[in-house]
Image (tube, rainbow, N blue to C red; front, side, top):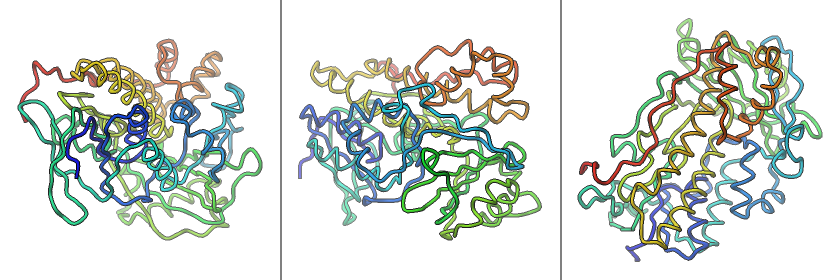
Length: 423
């Protein structure tokens, strides 16, 4: 078994697979370690328009177009009384044949497609292989210890290790870099319905955000095979009011709090399984250290209200893969090399984070902002669509009149080798 590589990647989701594909296409020796056996279940099914760029760079657009994934052209919002906004169609802002048409994906199928794509580019993939610890020589990460499917431990080494372990944030935890978001500490409960109501034609794939009291909300995501992903996000104190603790009971009680959700789920059948996660918005203090780089959710994991996670994961994988390729050619993988990468990813996270904070402010509505500043509409659309690496300072100035926006978190720079401490 080979034990020395150019790059080791922890995790085979969108971030890890995209970085692996970029590096594999240039014939670098890449080992991708995935603790589960694909296909495996994962939440995060709704793609936003600016996933198009990374998917195009990876060469996956033709495969996406051939897939059975439901096409998504819009987002709509529904008040508790059932009053629904007109859908916000992405093609009113972008090209209908490219950026403006995205997808609602079944992640087990989407992630399998991406992992197979990495394999097709020469990447060695070992599934059911858990990483138990990072290997260090002084302050530098030089590889990982792996537990095989048979339970045996062995070591593999590389010039650089990428953590794409998702919200588990394996390396960030081990390095002591992981920090919670100061405010975003919601609980999400979700399940699946078969046969529920959905739109038709161009509206079949519309993502619907349906509000419940106290700034809680449902997502309603139409998928193929007549399935609907439907989830509830709110503060724990709201969901557990009156002493309710069972996730199913919380979920079913809230269905009655939004008439549109109640009507659309009335004709469907729940699959019976309820998933729960809490306090999931977290960040890493650093994007990189000696011999180590963080990607996707392992770098930063935001509240899911605007479905930014997969886009940020894909973007981080592509950017990281291209920068590491250059670094391998030049013989330079020092942490400082990833300063721009970290700044780019943090800018995107912070822009989306401001919109998330505004969304949860009790006094805020996008309608109020646009009524006072009509020119804000296009900027809000761009940001929500994933065009995140832009200067939105004017937009934040307008929105700050309606909602308290967070300060930028001082995270995302590389940990310089000269000041890094041995672990």
